[in-house]
Image (cartoon, rainbow, N blue to C red):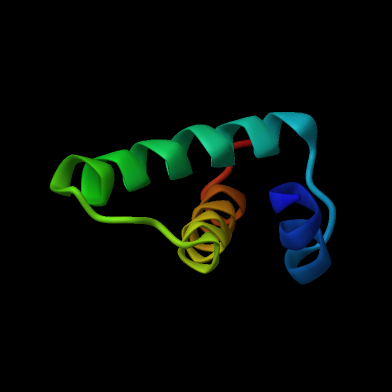
Length: 62
C-alpha cells in the first residue's frame, strides 16, 4: 500500500530503493514517535517516506 502511494506521487522505484526508504522511514518514526509515546498516522509515514526517497535519489552515488 505504501509503495503504491509513493510510486503514484513520485514515480516508480527499484526494490533496493524501496527497502532503503522503508528502513530509514522506520528508524525515523521509531526515534521521533514511538520512543516518545506518540501515535503515527499513515499520512505522516507517507510524508516521511516521500522526503526520504527524495533524499536518496538526490544524493545517490553512481
